[in-house]
Length: 77
Image 1 (cartoon, helix red, strand yellow):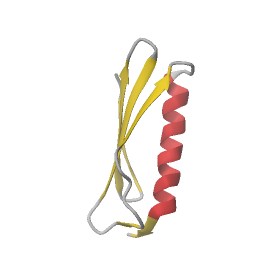
Image 2 (spheres, one colour; image 1 turned 30 degrees about the horizontal axis):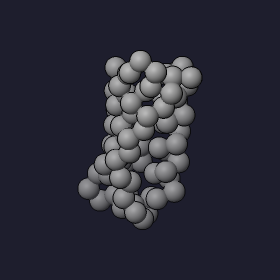
Image 3 (cartoon, rainbow, N blue to C red; image 1 turned 60 degrees about the vertical axis):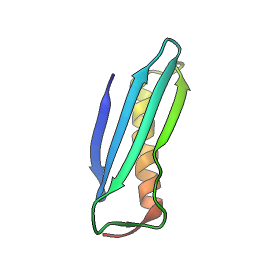
């Protein structure tokens, strides 16, 4: 299944999506580069979402949520 990797404001974001019969297994990890400070670290998250929505919609929303979380916790670069 897809893996989404990108860098946003000095943080490496890895989103892994696994598939089960009725669920999406999603793992999100955010790792700041050296010199990037977050007010509080963003711990790895594991989600199990029902397959009621298309994967494209889910991944788009996850990317937006991760970006907002980074913006909310960012101290400096």
